[in-house]
Length: 308
Image 1 (cartoon, rainbow, N blue to C red):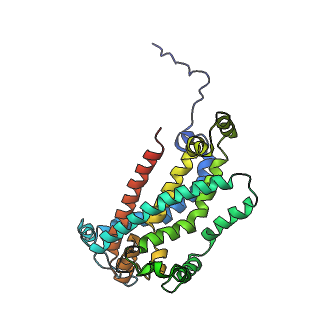
Image 2: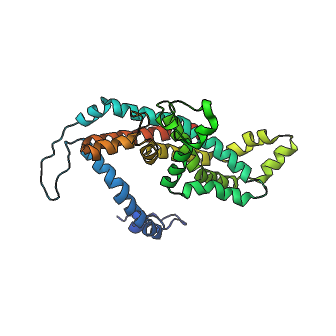
Image 3: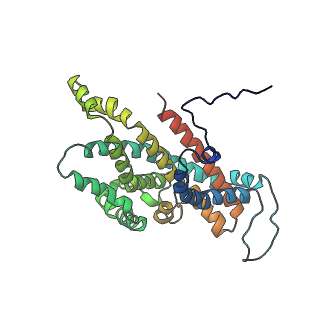
């Protein structure tokens, strides 16, 4: 008895084991491998180590010393959640994001739309908005301290209308002030992203809307905003991640999160707990909770912004 061999359908060549594992273009894997190794070494490994530390009684020791670091379960997380300083830092960064993210999206989109028009000095204005982003944070902070300190130029101009206590030592205004500062400093990057996105919006849509009698506001609402929706998703996610990693601005502007922790961010509290107080296990728990919160917020934003 003989067994008939079913011929392979034409047009479907047999895939090798190499193609099955690495895909049809193994060369792409080779080019992406260095960056994948970089991501694993710089991001994945530290994150995994932070998760491991957060579940153990971990402390710093002398190089080469061998000590026992017992598993403590969720004790570090219980310590974090019961700490009023940690809870306030998460509240502070929530206030920051509520101000910074919408302000960044609105200003970046409006300015990018204006800079995309054929206006005189367009190149100069594009470069001007990008300068604060590439300038060192310390230099920008020095300028703002000169302007907004208690005896600064802004308070001298405002006179009796100046806030008391002043901007940087006012527990109500400190975090909104930092949110405005970060918005101003980072705005150039997001304008650049929107400018790139505007190049892909067909000009025929604007011409058709003009023929139909649409004004500038209606074109912005019905053509520009839907056309740059993917860029808006990217801007929101990047602004959220930037806000969640806030450290330099409160550390320099308010002398380490003052007044009385009103401008302290979770990353700043992580530094204080882990480095200054020598509790890296508690700091790692704060970091893990912060990463989880950013992931949840980013997924929600993406779901809301990319829905039909």
